[in-house]
Length: 92
Image (tube, rainbow, N blue to C red):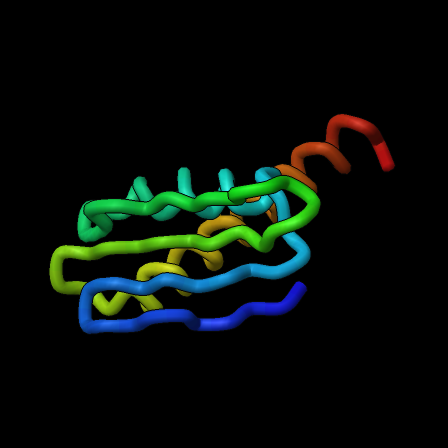
């Protein structure tokens, strides 16, 4: 994975996330949209397997990098919770 900031303002962020696909980006988009300060969270992969995905975030005042950090923390917490439940249910 390689991340490159393409454009950043006080309320907008556009970044290329090389090496990733819909799996990670859809989860990030969905988690971002749970934040009331996020107006738009979307991504585009022009040609799957050829072009790198571009993530776009627009907020209503919150720093979009902070919104991304918060969403990533929420994603990690969700994975930790799933791991705990899975390990408990699977007796692993």
